[in-house]
Amino acid sequence: MSVPVGNDRLQESLAPRMELVEERLRDAVAQSDRLAHTTSRHLVDAGGKRLRPLLTLLTAQLGDGTRPEVIDAGVVVELTHLATLYHDDVMDSAPTRRGAPSAHEVWGNSVAILTGDLLFARASVVVAGLGPEAVRLQATTFERLCLGQLHETVGPAEDDDPIDHYIQVLADKTGSLVAMSARFGAMLAGCKPSVVKQVTEYGELAGVAFQLADDVLDIRSDTEVSGKTPGTDLREGVATMPVLLLRRRVAAGPVDGVTPEQHAEDLALLADIDGDLASDEALASVVARLRMHPVVDETAALAHEWVARARDAISALPEGEVKEALHSFADALVARAA
Image (cartoon, rainbow, N blue to C red; front, side, top):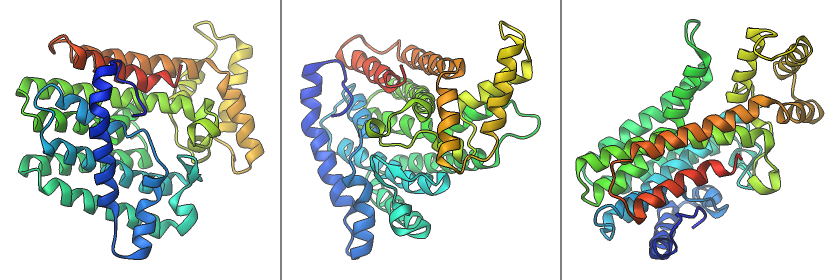
């Protein structure tokens, strides 16, 4: 279990169930076709934190967490997440994922996209055994995942606030699946509707916080630690929160403590961000300058604000080790961006 839940007893009790999720996950991605089998296992074999199934098992502890349906739900959420990674890496032209070459780098875009589709299909097969409500939830979450990617690709409309637009993209692309993970656990463990509602809201807020922390990592990460290439979003022209905050700062001009000299530096940095970052040298220069800029710290602070909102969303849950573990889980999502 990669992310601590702040309670040794609870962590020890969840560990065997996480191992069962991992075993079922590997069974679920097995394909009779040799190529499909190899491509489907690519990211599973690369590892990962398994945050989403862990959250499913954790929220299930608020009810009857021993139900077998909870294990299947953990498999569904991780399969869905893995499928989105195959697609996202094609959209972002990301060269690595989890320290390994991205699937599209090995087999090409078409194979990577089709592999993602195969994993979505396998997730649908598993979720069909969980009943109509679970199927509906999976379908609506899949819709939000697609809408989030669509809106990120197209960008905000002329009358949209870019930062509000971006937060909605994060809620759809990341928050919706984390929310589904939390909801599945509580729902399938027989929790009251009020509990299911609280953990669902918690999941969405924590998911946004996680992605804001990821924006910080895209600038400040060490590839050997994170498995990602710093500046991938910058190179692909994806305006993440640090860039959006920089644009807002430039638009405001030399005010609010920003000197004319700082404003000129901001203008030059933004021009380079919007310029040609095809060469590794140009990208490294921009990343190095942005890494030291206040907007990255502001993004990290925003991530912590969203974690605080996630904690508030479950304030009415009974006090105890599960609630404390959910607090620890949310804190761990953004600790990496500190």
